[in-house]
Image (cartoon, rainbow, N blue to C red; front, side):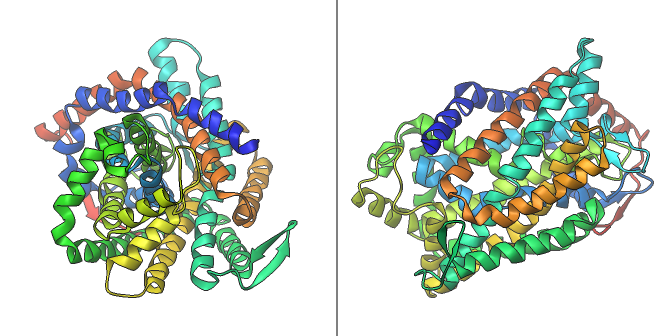
Length: 497
């Protein structure tokens, strides 16, 4: 009953209107900004690792980006991509990448507005994000009070952090990977909450909750100090393993690319009828894409607002690199690994043989498909592949828990007008959600996360459309000053805080 209700709500909020709004906002901004995401990608990558001397803020630009990346590079890059492929076929990968290309413009706009409309609090910290550019920016533009919409965004953001994308989905992914590696046959069980759970799941929940608490209590500076070390390491290591698998099967790359493109427009022709229409591939690709890179969700600008910079366009450029790294690089690597390793064909045949129907349960789900791909991808054992996936998930999901705690706390800060006692209470609720996450049903957890993502995205996207003229004006002015020499870049290579 609960699962059916959640699926119904998920189908409504992730229907055609929201997908049109997400893609339409990205296309609108791409046009108004004259494809800034590709024209200025080189400069964005330069700004990413060079701090602005004299900039106001709490952490370096890279520290802010690392915090944002810690939240975006998570289970969505490993389990989410595979889940999209299971539910929408290989064509979901195509739509995920297309959405990311336009999403880079969306992310640029979010980072720009975060700096332009951020505030400095009495304690010296900076607070910004969609709630402030909705409240302040939309009021300047329209003359009306939109604070209620900012409050609505903040409410959905706080709920998403504690009940969905920030906690339960992440720790669930870590726990399931640990169980698959250490106790795949459920030989070591304990009784908890009226059910039986592997001891590996219980220990994982405790360890992750304790480690999360140790970092979260320190706030943005401690989170940034951890993520600036862990995020680059884990991302590079994961991509290297994926590249090894892809190059080991290099002869299969043309077939994989052709299959992905064909399945984007005719899924049933590739999947043997297991997947439904083109819209299913589009829906799953966009939904899992935004779960992974969060372009349009409104989360990344909350971290961007803490960056040490006086130029909103500069931080917009840095912020958009997050989508490039997350989806166009890492998610693409996961998708190609699944295809060239032969794991997708094997899983598809198993699902067909298992009698899977649209809306039914797959014999091979997302997590199992990724583990299968890594096990089959190189001449090593399935256990070696499972270990790689478990390790990657542990790092990816743990840093996502840290990053989303910062997002959710900032949302709660805005909701409660900075009530410190309320924020402290929310912090412990968040940590408790991490502790109990592995004991909840995975399918329901992912559906809840998708619903909150959609509810967050809607008010943020409305603000981006309304303020698109402001974004275009700021962009034009910055590059005019830069080209004329009026603005002098004063940069130092600095990726630590």
